[in-house]
Image 1 (spheres, rainbow, N blue to C red):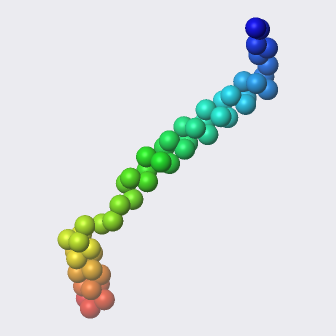
Image 2: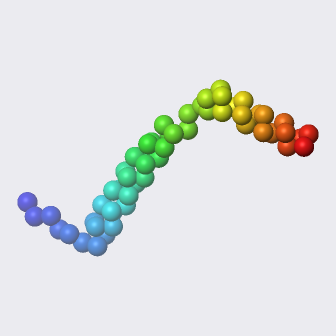
Image 3: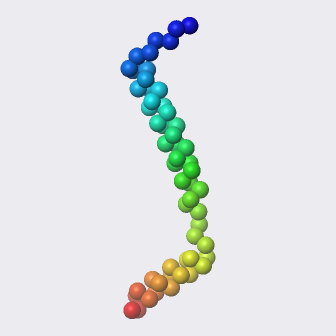
Length: 54
């Protein structure tokens, strides 16, 4: 079986590869958006309160 290679086929394959890689990168970044630890929230709130009064 001979596969005919044309510019259109190459572009389609490259777009599919880019789409798959983009999905993998996006999926990997979902793990980095976890909830902030309570201590960090406390520090953030403490700093914001000082901005209001200071």
